Length: 233
Image 1 (cartoon, helix red, strand yellow):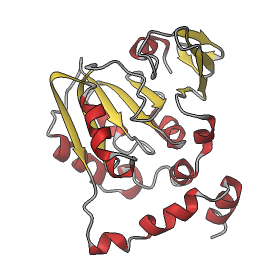
Image 2 (cartoon, one colour):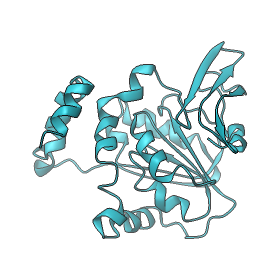
Image 3 (cartoon, helix red, strand yellow):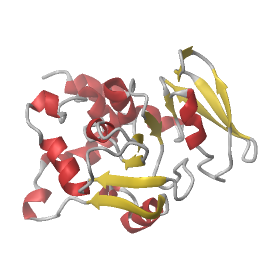
């Protein structure tokens, strides 16, 4: 996390300003440290360059493990196709030069869309509740116009009406309350700003896609056992 980006964060519970205690830094990039809310008396760690606003059990959850093992498979550079690029600009209908604007990406996964949001030259805040944020950081974290945060939609560490634009692709259906999650995201967008969100269409064929019936079992598996299973083929 670059020091100048700290001003974009507030306590996810009370929305108060917080205190930054930097630990190890590489230039202006904080790798480890601590963020403290005096009002809530709550500490949030910065680990591997990422502010963490979730419970410790999320740091290595199995949903994020999937993206860390296969961190680049959905990137256009890996697939040699412009799937993510085309989807990003088709869904958002945004221009390709958004310098001076702030974009929030809700549910980044490994960062396949983060890559293209950054190319607009906007300031990008990208967050995800899972350990997939580490995969995103490893791919995109060196960009000075990017702040990656581990956080949930239900407790976002950002002020209301902070974003000029916000996008959320294929995420809402995975939240406990999609309608509430949508409303919470809307609150982060400025008056006159723009938001692009979608959900996967549920149909007969969707039910038989492997990820929908395997993932519930994988999420309950021990991380070490799952890692060994994924690397045994």
